[in-house]
Length: 410
Image 1: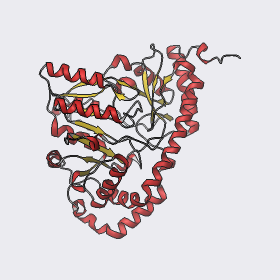
Image 2: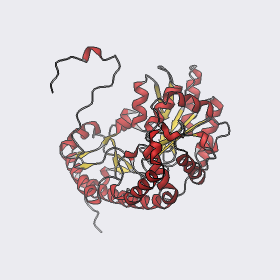
Image 3: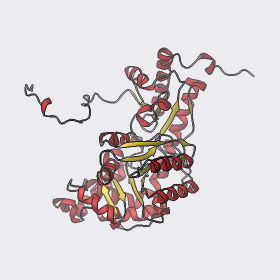
C-alpha cells in the first residue's frame, strides 16, 4: 500500500536518523552480540517450556504472573543464588528487577539519573549501545583510557579531579569490569577496590555492566563491584543474552531500594516477557551451572580459529590481545585503514564488521580498529570470512603488505 500522507513535518526535533530496511545478515557476519546457535540448549528449553506451561501456564492471564513488577519470583530466587556463587553478591529478591534485556536496564538507569547536559564517565572503548543512548540524551561522555587490566585508575583519578576543578560532578562511572566490551579484559580485584575508593571520594556512583561475566575462560573472576562496595553506591546489571540466548531478551538489575523504587516507577511496560522468565527459571535451576562451561569451551575454540585465521591472512598487519572471555576480539589494523570505510567495502563483499569508532569516545584512536564477534559464525565461516576481509583490505588500503605474511626461513 502506498501512502501520500507526509509524516515528516510531525517528527519532533532530535529523532535519530531513520533506519534502513532489514536486508538480512551478511554471508560472513562478525557483528552484534549474536551467539553460537549450536550451543543454544534447545532440548532442555523445550522441556522447560512444557514443564512451566503445564505447571502454571494459566497465570499468564495475569500481568506479571501475579509476581509483582520486579519479575517472576523463581527467576529472581535463582539469580540470588547464582550472583552469590559467581560474583560474591549478597542480595535478596527485593534487590532484583527483571528487565527486557540489559538495554532496558541502561534506559531505566539513564532515565532515573540523567538530564540533558549532565556528564558521565565511561571507558574510552565501550559498548556502542551505551554510547548511543548517552548521545541521544544530550549527555556529555568523558572517556577514560584502558590497558590490559581495564580502566586505568591513574586516568580515572585525573579525570575526576579535572571535572571537580570545573565544578562538574559526574552522574555515574559506567564500567564493564568483567570481560570488557570490546577489549575482553578483566579488571583485577585491587583495581576494583581503587575504583570504588575514588568513586566514594568524589561522591559518584558506579554503574557496573556485567553482561559478559559468565563467559570467562578460566571460570575464575574477581568479585563484582557491587559485592565489594562498602557504601551501596553501585548499580549492577546483567543478562541471560550471552549465557543462554540473546533473543530471549531477559536481563536484570541489582540496586539499592532508593534507586530501584524510582526505576520501578519508570518501568511502565506492564512487565517483561513472562513466558521467557518462566522458561528460564525452570531451565536454569538444574542446568545453568553445567551449560555455561560447555558454552565457554565451544566459544574458546572459535576464538582460536579466528586468531589463527587473522595470523594466516594478515600476518603482523592485524594486532590484537587475546581476550579473557566473551564473544568479541578487538583488532588493530595499520593506521591507513579507516574501518568506517572498510565496513562499507567489506559489506559489499559479504563480510560485516563493527568499525572501531562506533565503540569509542576517541575516534582518532579507534579509526583503524574493529570489533569481530566470533560466536555466531561457524569455524569455516570464520576462516572464509577473514580471508575475504583480508582481500578487501589489500585492495582498498594496500594491507597487509606482502612482507608481513612471508614466513621467516630457518
